[in-house]
Structures are given as structure tokens and as C-alpha cells.
Length: 190
Image 1 (tube, rainbow, N blue to C red):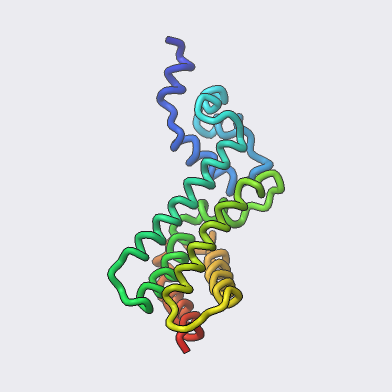
Image 2: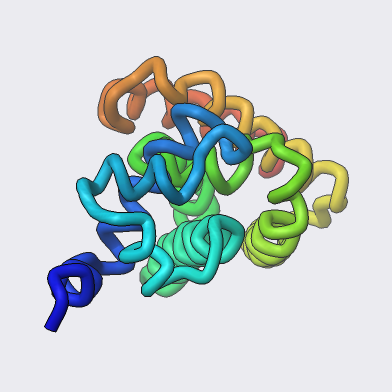
């Protein structure tokens, strides 16, 4: 067995994705190469091609994984035995918590602007937003419009993007997040 093959077996998809995520956030998609990712990992770029056929496939795997994580967070909240008001509060706080707990994930999901990757990330946000909108609508005790739901989503997104890279953890702004969500919900339940 050649040394290169043993490296390919030791190197995992998760290791590659973790290194790539950090580089994509730091340098932008267009300014990261498979060779740079390999250098970061201390392996040959061929070892990465064992797991991913190209940079686009690697990026898409990241996007899929991150949106799956957000979807799981939403499912976890929706399965809780809470009244609708409490559950809606948890959904909104859960979005903020996810974004600030997984800042590099969130940046890749919602903030990378490179034209080449827009096709990879257009489907994920649409599905998450649709589920978010359906959840908000079903948990509200009054009729709420799509525009109002989108305004809530944009407000949460703005909160997360404002604090991304400026706080270390969700805990740093948890109390302010609660105040923000309470303010948003005041309009929903009045």
C-alpha cells in the first residue's frame, strides 16, 4: 500500500469539510483552492479528491450539512410539548442561537456572495424559510401575512449577522436575543 492511499483512508470527509469551512469563511469561496485546503490539513490535494471530485462538490456538501443542522434544530423545537406562544418564542430564539453558535456555518449558508456558488445555496434557504414560515403561521393565534413572517425572518437574520464575528457565543447576547424576540412577538400577538 502506498503512503498516499493510507493518508486518504485516514483523512475523513469531516476533517476536510471543517478545514474548508474555515477557509471559505476567511477567504471567500473564489479565493480557496483544493491545494490550500490540503495544505491546511497537511496532506496532498489528491487525498481530498478521494472524498470530493471538486471544490464545488465540497462546498455543496457543506451547505447541505449546515441546512440539515438548522432543520434538525427547528424539528427539535417543534416537537417540544409547549403551548403555541412558547413554541413560537423557542423557534425564533432557536434561529438566533443556531446562527451565533454556528457562525461559520451561518456565513456559508446565508452570507457568501460569490456568483459561482449561488446555485448551490439557493435551494437550502428556500426550504428552511418555507418550514420557518409554516411554523410561524401555524403557531400564531391570529392571521399573519407572508410579508409579516418574512419581516420577522429578516429581523432575526439581521440580529444574527450583526453579531456574527463580534461575539464568541450565543450566551454573550442571550438576554438581548430574548428582548429582541419578545419585541417581535409583541406585534404578532397584539
